Amino acid sequence: MRVILVTGKGGVGKTTVSAATALRSADLGKRTLVMSTDPAHSLADAFQVDLGDQPSPVVDNLHAQQIDAQQRLEESWGAVRDHLTDIFDWSGLKGIEAEELTVFPGMDELFSLASVRDHVRSGEYDAIIVDCAPTAETLRLLSLPEVMSWYMEKMFPVGRRMAKVVRPVLSRVSSMPMADDEVFAAVARFYERLDGIREILSDPDTTTARLVMNPEKMVISEARRTFTYLGLFGYTVDSAIVNRVLPERVTDPYFRRWREIQQGHLETVREGFSGVDVSTLRLFDEEMVGIDRLRVVGEELFGERDPTERFATARPFRVEDVEGDEGDVALVVSVPFAEAAEVDVLRHDDELFITVGPYRRSMMLPDSLKRREVLKAKLAGGELRVVFGIAHGNRP
Image (tube, rainbow, N blue to C red; front, side, top):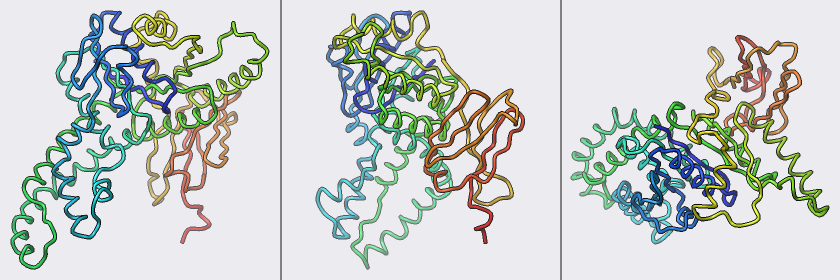
C-alpha cells in the first residue's frame, strides 16, 4: 500500500500532477484511487469527468473522488460546533462571527483526510494519491491525535462524569450552556476519526509527500517552508516537482532573461531540497486536461519509473531536546562521510546554511527555532547537531 500526498501553493499545478500520477499508476496495473481534499476541487476538471463524494471509475484500475469536506465536518464536529455556538451566544457574541469561531482553520481538510484512513483499512487499493489543499496547516494539525490521546485517556472520562453531577447544580444558578452527552459523544467520535491518521501518514514505508512548485521566488520559498514543517512533524518528502519550466526549444530572445531567472531558481530548489528527488515539468503549449494529455504529463514526469516508488526515504532532519539544558533544542541533520574541517554552519535571518565541502544546503527554520539563537554546532557519527536556545550569557 502506498499513499502519496501532493501539495503546493495554489495554482502551481498540483492537481494536474496528482491526476497524472494516479493515471500512470493505474496504467501500470495498480488499483489506484486519487482523491481531492482541497475545498476548491479541480480534479473533475483535470479528468474532464463528473466526480462526487464517493469514488467513481475513471479508467481501468482508477477511481477518483472529491471529498465533501463540509459533510465530513458536519458528521464529526456538528454537535461540538453547536455547543460552542451556544456558549458564544450566551457570552454575547452572536451570529456569523460566533459560528466562524467554532471551526478552526484546516479542520475541514483534516476530516477529509480521515477518509484516507478508511480507504487504507479497506484494502481495496494499492495506491492512494491525495490532492491536498494548498496549505501545510492541515499537516500540522495531524499532531492533534497525539496531543489529544492523554486527554482522552485521562481527563475525558472524568470530565464526562463530573459534567453529569455539575450540570443540574449549575443550571439552577447560571444560564451558561453545559455540555451534554451528545457533545461528549461527538468529541469521542472526533477523536476516533482522527485516531490512526497520523500513524498512517507519518509512516515513510506507506506515505510520502510530494511538493509541487513553479520556478518563482515566492512559490519556492513557500514550498521550502512547507518542506521544513513536514520534516518537523515527521512526514517524509520524497520528491520536489518544478512545474512550468521553459523548454529548451524556446529560443526566442524575449524569453532569454526568463530562462536565466528560472535556471537560478532551479539551482535554489536543488540546494534547498538536498536529499530529495527533484523533477521538472516543461511549460506545455496547451492546457493539460483530459486522459490523453494527462498521460503525456505522467510520461514526461516519471519516464520509466513507477510513480508509486519511494524516491527518497531518509528524513532530512529531526528536532530534539538537549539533555541538561532546559529550553535548548538540537536540529540534527544527516551528513554521512563528512569531516569536521569541511563543515560550516551559518545563520541568516530565517535560513540556516550548511556547507559540506563544495555542497551547500539551505533550510528554512520553523517558527520554534526562529526565536532561538544558534549556540553551537557539533559533528559526530555522521550527524551534524546544531543547538538552538537562549544565549548562555543572557541566562539567569
